[in-house]
Image 1 (cartoon, rainbow, N blue to C red):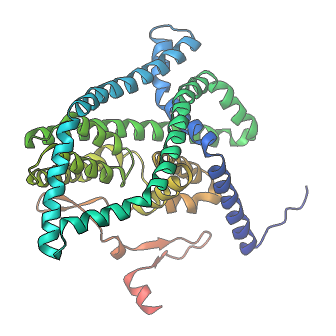
Image 2: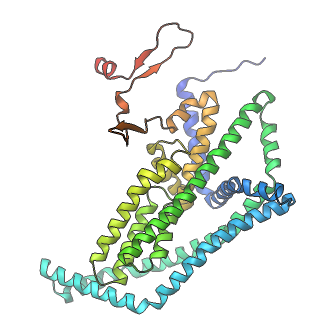
Image 3: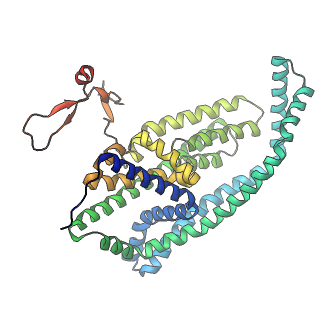
Length: 395
């Protein structure tokens, strides 16, 4: 048997960092190719039970079952866009009213600036004109980049259903390819990884869909109660943008505030919009996310936020949406491969979720006071506490 040379720790670290850097660089350069493929892979995993239903219950051939599953997904997405298009048509019809309201708010703002900073309206208009002169060229470049992004989005909207269909069609072919890469004595590990990836991704995406519907209903109902126009559209947009963790809901709130300003001259409506968003977020973060989403994927908040930022830098909105599922897949793989288990633990979240206080279940954040023991293999001595309050003070 050939001798295996074990690299020192610093060489392993340098090799690992080099591989990660090359992988991230490749993802950034080829994001237009990689992102649609990864999105299609997630949709294929989600639609796998639908394809099985068509094939086993309705006796569809494999090809027809795969096509029907993709068709269901496309029809659902088209239904959402059609619902939004009706609301957008109402906005176009009310364009004159929106411009009038914006003029009223602009006049009120100029009066406030005049009273506070003693600047006349003529001086304010001159400052605005000077600031907008240099922005004309920038606006042209923004329009050009927007048109390019729109064409790329249309291309992806065509490619993603095709890729999803092909993933469903060649599922067995891809699984056999993976099986050929792995030695026979490791097949059980591969099967366990694939099953857990399927369960994790399906549960996470289904949880996101349920959360999206509930957030849309709650937000839309709240906007209707306070009398905000286009409540249905803004509610649906809030649910859709909430699919982007941590960032999407902020964007949705800003859009709702802008809508309240442009559709009504009463500035107090903005306060109602802010209250509705705060209430919905409290319900979402304390009830919906822990019960529906977080219970499906155990990833700590630090890794989630860093992953979303990296995903946004690599692939924009698509990368931000893909960040959590990709981290979940990596965690499943790391947990099942012994040399990579520390990385799986790093991605995970072992904080106690709740504690009881007067019959109430409240979040628990005092994990630092808990003892973490380190077991030494091959030693019969009692495990010593590591990183406890006593040991950290003595070191």
